[in-house]
Amino acid sequence: MRYDFDEIIDRQETNSINTDGFRDFIFHAGPDMKFPYADDEFIRMWIADMEFACAEPIRQAIQKRLDRKIFGYTIMNLDTAYHNSLTKWCQKKYDWSFPREELCFSTGVIPALYQLVELICQPKEKAMMVTPAYGFFKHAVDYNQIACDCSPLIVDSGHFRVDFEDLERKASQKEMKLLIWCNPQNPSGTVWTKEELERVIRIAEENDLWLISDEIHCDILRHGVRHIPLAKLTDYKKLITCMSASKVFNMAGLQFSNIIIRDPQLREQFVLRDKNVGFVNPLSIVAHKAAYDEGEEWLDQLKTYLDLNFSYVKDFLAKELPLAEFEIPQATYLAWVNLNAYLGDIDDLPRFFAYEAGILLEGGDDLFVGNAKGYVRLNLAMPRKTLERAMQRMKEAILEHANKNKAKA
Image (cartoon, rainbow, N blue to C red; front, side, top):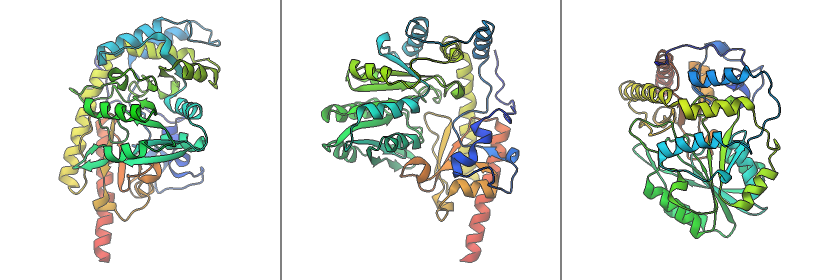
């Protein structure tokens, strides 16, 4: 089956955060916040969901479940078929699997992270992460009133690498209890090498740290790139792996994730403290199972389309905004672009682009914890024509700002 990623889908009046929740999420403002653009005139490049239709096998599986007519309280502890589907996927994609008893569930990786930090860290203990980082990593730590240390990534010509000396120094603090890792990394899109991952594992082991690996972007890769699960490289008991089909198959609203916990005691506590008391959405189960069983063809076509979108953005920036720093990431559908050369004097980049270009995007230290000043994160999972309009609008706003600055000088 050929999938149409050029289709323009109307998402208005679907209670989507993407279309209806941006004022609160990006700007921390209410519905009275006004812009020079109507809401339906914005081009949305911000939150990490796609403008593409969900794969047909997933929609068919949901429809088949709808035809069963009853949607009562649903549990997963007796289910073996789902674990078999997930195992086959993991074995094929990563040559890795895990025992069924390690598999727990949550409504999402972020809710799980909030719960795990609560279980792992005590008052006066600390957690750490590399930056820039997905903002909710820090939110989960702050929510639990735990101190947080950040280790800035080193940037070489658009390539991101870990400052291992800094990471090791901060990990060795007696108060440090937890390392929150992102594999592949968000927002940079870096796919960590085997050597880098092994060094992270060694740091965790030597300092007796719990290690949470968020691997939700692990299947959104450029063609030819392979993901290595952290758990494939070690039998370290204090490792928790978080995965889901929700990001790659564009069904985040179904609220379902796989939380793989090796340590039996933590696993028991995680289940006992589950705020949903073990219940899951029945439609989420069949959707995720269908993704693992029948979604590979759609995913392969998606990756091809995204590869071309990334190439378009790379070429556009090189030609039209040559001072912008950008390298095509190995993973995710998110472009992490350094605009400091043009907009270094702008403190609030999301506000600038919303008002000056009609573009909704995320960027800067406020949204990405730190080490992110002057960067924007662009969601490229959209039809090509929409992407072309977005890049043109961004260019015009950036160059107009540069010309104003020249006139002032």
